[in-house]
Image (cartoon, rainbow, N blue to C red; front, side, top):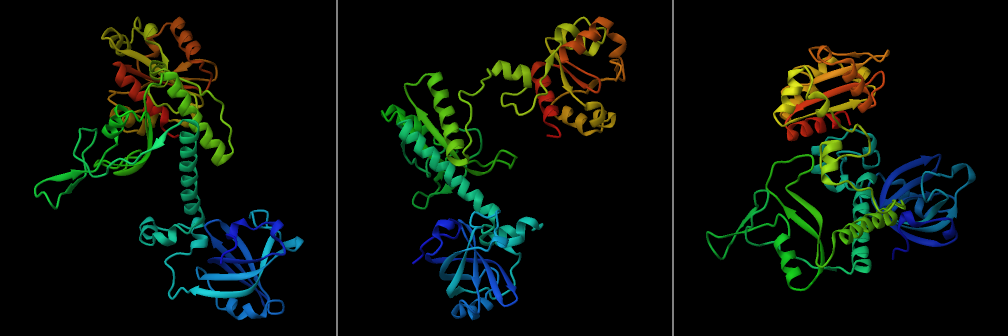
Length: 423
């Protein structure tokens, strides 16, 4: 029987006889002594087969190749001082193999080498075709284990701290109005009728609240028949919760505690709690988005009051029509962003156009503090207005100021997209 997983062995196990199962990650023949890296889901440990110390296993070790599945029994020993491997959790020990049993051999060439795939460019279609090999890779294995640890931390916190109970809701149900199209499953026993796969458990969790089960959660599978996007998939999993008799503050505290617990349990990272909070209005005003990336600044600056009296009709006209004028100040933008990118045909102009803007106005702050632009902006600003622009935006020499002038929605959408470019 297996006594340990490969990645569990440490110096305190020295002297024990252990039985391991796993895959040969690498095989090295060093002048008669054969070294194997044995891999399972927990990690890698080094196996040694020496014709003098372990003659019974030596011929078996000679025949092994990468990705052979083996059972190995041997004694845990300390590695020599000059062969310690600080990169591995098991780097202080090695196993002298008394017995090697081949469980499954590789009979033909592999489409890619698992042990080196992370450092090589392997086509995605090839990885998906041989998914069982792809999932053996360290990176993919760690992703799956990380997901498991996150879900485990969620369950423990919600149940032990929050008093929630986990309930499974139906997958085959009737169609309900949601934000996307449904996936349909024809009914065999009711011809012409069908089931719909749930886009979310929304109706079921509301039923549970009315039923008196006031704190419910589920790691829920959801299905939405919509086009692929960066943040959308046809099939995905979400943590779904519903709770009754809780105030806004209690709900925020619950979710902040949940996130803090996940980071502490899984990564050992202690997050400050409570989290910084933004109202919707503040988020839209400062970032132009209700889901801003706050890892960097680049906050928007509203200059509508300053531009309403401007001689530049694009700005004053937008304000007069009930719109706004905002600026996205970009430190170092003079060097990083060329005029070609801002003018028609450039990528920034295209982003602005797709957001609904008719164009992009800009000002560059030069080394002497003078502002430089193309068009009528500079000529229609008084010296006092120019200085006020610099003061409000905190612009220094090297800053690029991108303007958007239109209705509130278009301005926020435009500058939000520009803010996220090159990030």
